[in-house]
Length: 480
Length: 143
Image (cartoon, rainbow over all chains, first blue to last red; front, side, top):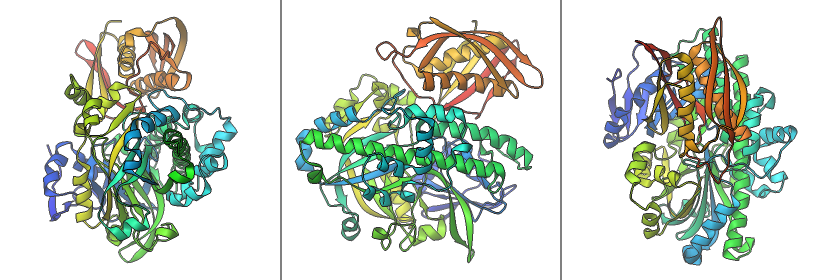
């Protein structure tokens, strides 16, 4: 039974009025069509719960891909004043810095159409993936600590990719403030064997192409053109991030009690940003962020090699360059204007992407006048989107937008629906070639198990939070 | 071991509901249940390497999460899978303490079909307690 009210503000925005222990109203970006489904899994109640936490600014926000999560909803955005507000591992998620990197090439679809199978096989061979997959590196503790502090910079220094990749990554692929001293030995042990692996579930490497361009000027600035071959890498911090989150949920449970913070839900456990516990979590989270940045940089390096090998071309001919890379499970210290005053806040984005508008200094210089690129991956049978951030996002959502499509079917339901069907066969008929370490993964990750991401994208575009640049279609997918 | 378990759907994740006559049996059955989340063919894990385990927790619920977390941790770091569990004792004083013997073997890709990676054992909707004449537990795994 719903214990919250939901009232329409615009065609793309719904509000949960401030009631009871809520300190601010809740705001969910969605269309009328989407709202019925959103109500079903109790995610709006989670938006209302987040609104009770100390120091929350303006609204407890949720993007159109909102769905139920641990404590904070997935698709949730919440900013807390660093003076007196809180930081919460549940507001970041278990997979710290799960994120997406988009790369472009100089190739056209027809250049590789009859070689997609080879490319996917080469990617599958070069990129370690799957449940229980271990990486190729044997890192000492000291080396792992360097990864945790330097992120993608460590990877470049060790021969993965080039320095040119770095400024096209959020935070240049290295979040400041990481302290391996805040990380438990358990997290180090879980992380060490998994650096340089894709993982499983909804993580993937995808070869695709630009199917449609919505804004020629913006596409041109991002180096994209119709028919162009692209690549997407979607993965996170693996067991390392999961363990850091696990460790700190327990720390925060004790801390919340110590600081007298009332929790409507245990998984909202938090501590003041400026408390020792809050600072330590941030420092450990930053390590997880950097682990994921390094991970994606390494996987990119192998993907480039796989392409070159499978196509028999030179790296120069392929010219695979990073367009941009975004994080969608992260907490950031940012300055935002709130009621006319610039404040420093801790912005939590869990299943939400930063989408800074034109002119923001954090956007790389090459893109600064058009806004920050945003990558929204869809499921493996449908499409992904490239967007840019807007001034409206800066004003309304702390510069945030959606991150992708949520699930509509549980894994069990998906497996049932897949029975007797050859999913790889069905996808091949659509021109999409999939390879996965486990057949079960393909079933559980089938396109029908997910919402249609284009609906989510239309909602954020309609709300003015992002502008559409291009749509990408998959040609080949490697899943764990 | 005298318990039963069932896996329950939970949006993108997996939940486990366990039932047993004794608290020790509940913990043993839960570990068996978790193995069937991790593997398509849990019966393929041979209980040939034994070790003793000690787990602590603030209360019985945290002990339950820590027990399962530890087993998952042994898989993700040492590559070890466990299929037989014998809980010697669970003591509840100011904190909870569990002592058990677990038996299993190293992961062999040729025989063990991996199914899902458990990112974490969560505290969400966690329940461990007595109902009527038996013990019940519920836990959700982040996949």
